[in-house]
Length: 201
Image (cartoon, rainbow, N blue to C red):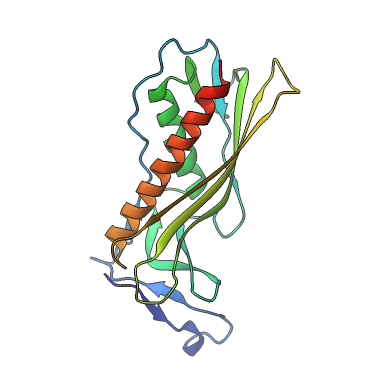
């Protein structure tokens, strides 16, 4: 399943640019997921709850399409791949599961919970794509997420975390690209866990 260009301009004159088309099986899109990180639980987690807010993302990333950046810097998508759910939901749910396993606090919940806890984690997805230096070569996955931790008991004390992770794909095909996304997301989550552990007491 090697990535290749399909020039839609030849078929649809009003479409600028092109999509990466990847081979599908049975007409189904290749579904990608972002699993949580298995981590040793924290001893004696502080009482209370941490609420993880649904991440914000611009229109290029608030989608089920899997983004890529071409060598000229233009954003495009893999035609044959989809996230298992909208990307912000996948990022939030993976982080929530990791936080719950790590026991950063006694309870971790999403922002649709009726009783928010003192801690609130807001996320903004700034980059979440595979980047190509040259077409036909394996891309590098790059993630950039801005995280803000606030405490309702101490409104003036806000912690900001700038999280970046990269991981090269071993080949220019969907299984290798999915593996690179998973590895980069694991790096990003471990960085977030370490930072939260240092400030959530």
